Image 1: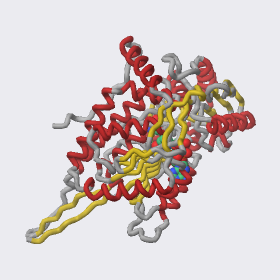
Image 2: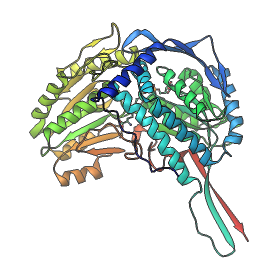
Image 3: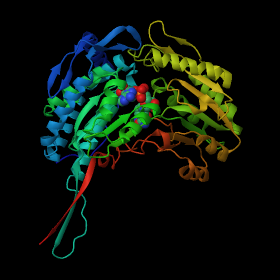
Image 4: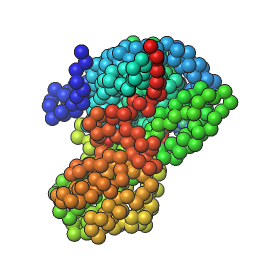
Length: 515
Ligand SMILES: NC(=O)c1ccc[n+]([C@@H]2O[C@H](COP(=O)([O-])OP(=O)(O)OC[C@H]3O[C@@H](n4cnc5c(N)ncnc54)[C@H](O)[C@@H]3O)[C@@H](O)[C@H]2O)c1
Ligand SMILES: N[C@@H](CCC=O)C(=O)O
C-alpha cells in the first residue's frame, strides 16, 4: 500500500551532521568533475566528437563535464527508438510505471546531497537552493506516481440498462521534453516523469548549461527499472535539435519550460501539420514571469521587506517566480524601501560551495551580459539604491541590485531580467497597486503583504496570476501543495505538481458496450 504523499523535508543545515554530510558529497562530486557523458538512445550509449562543455558558473575554469551533443541524425534515431518503445511502454501497467518513479525517488533520496552537490557545481546553486531543487525532484516522482494510481481506472460515467460505459485515459505517444537550466533537476525530472508515468516515451533535451545532472537522473531511472528506449537523452542545440523535434511528424506532444520567446516559437511551430503527421500536437509550455510583491499600508513591514529580499535574490533572481517588482503603497514606501536596501546590503554573495553564501553567480556569460545591460537601463529608469556592480573575472557574479521610483511602464518593470534586480514602484493606494501588478503581459506569481482582509479578498479576485501568495514571498511552491504555473505569456495555464497536470499527457477514451 502506497503511503500518503508528503513533501520531502528540506535539510536543516544548522545540524552539524547534515553540514558534514553535504561537505562529503561536495568532495565526491569534485572528484568526479570533468568527465565525459554520452547520449542515451534506445538504451545505447553514444559518444560524439562534438560536445557540450558544462562549466561551474562560480569558477568558469572548472569543467563540470563534457556531454555528447545530438545532431538531427541522432535525434531521428532517438525518435525511432522512442516510437518503437511506445508500443510496449504504453501497455505497461500504470502500477508498474508508478513503481519505477517510487524506486527512483528512493534512489535519489539516498543520494540526496550528492545530487545537490552537482547542482552547486553545475548551476551555481547555494546549498539551500540546491537542497530545495533536489527535494522538489523527489516530490515530483512521489506525487505523480500517486496521481497516476488515482487516474489509472479513469472516471466513472453513467450507463443505461443493457449498456456499460467506461471512460479512461490512454497515453499520447512520443513526447519531447525541453527543460531549462534554472531548476536543472526538479523541472527536468518533473516534466520527464509526468510524461513517462502516463505511458508516453520521451526524448529529453535538457538545457545546454546543465546537462550533467540530467544524465545522472537518466542513470537513476535506468537503475529503477525503466526499459531501454522509453527515455532517450539527447542534449543538443535548441535551434538544431529542438526545432527538428518540434517539427517532427511523429512528435505527439512537447513539454517545454523556458523563456517566453522560445515558448512562442515552439507553440507556433508545433501548430503546423507536417506531411505524414496524423494528429494535432499538444504543447505544454511553462514560460517566464514578471512577478510582483504588493505591500499594503496596513501590513507587517518587516515581513514585507524580508519577503521581497528572499524572493528577489534567492538563486540570484533566476526563478520564473522571482520578485522583480516591489509595488508599495505610498504611505509605507520609504520605510519598506530603506529596510530592503539595508537587508540587501547584508547578503552574502560568493562561492555557492560555501555554506554561508546566500547568493552565488548567474548562470553564464550571456546571462551576465544581459543582466548588466538591464542594470544600465535601470540607471536611466530609476534611482540605484544598492548593487549595480558585476564581476565576471572568475565567475559570473552580480551584486543584488535595488532600483527605486521606477515607472510601472519602464522596461525594468515590464521585461523579464532573470537576475538579481528588483524595481520599486510607488502606488497611490491598494487599488492602484493591483493595477500596476497586473500591468504586464505575464501572470505567473504574485504576493500581497497586508493585514486588511477586504484588500486580500480583492486581490484574490483581481490579481491575475497563477500562483498568488498572501503574507509570504512569491517563490517556493511545493509540489502537491501549491500547484505551479501561470497565465497569459507565462504559459499554457498548466499547473506542474497539481492534481490535473498528468491529464495534459493523456487522452480520454470512451468505450460503450451493449449487452
Ligand atoms: N513557468 C515556469 O514554470 C518556469 C520554470 C523555470 C523557468 N522558466 C523560464 O525559463 C527561462 C529561463 O530558462 P532558459 O534560459 O533555459 O530558457 P530558454 O528558453 O532559453 O531555454 C529553455 C530550453 O529550450 C531550449 N531551446 C532553445 N531554443 C529552442 C528551440 N528553438 N526549440 C526547442 N528548444 C529550444 C533550450 O536549449 C533549453 O533546453 C526564464 O524565462 C524563466 O522564467 C519558467
Ligand atoms: N516553482 C518555483 C519556480 C520555478 C521557476 O523557475 C517556485 O515556486 O519558486
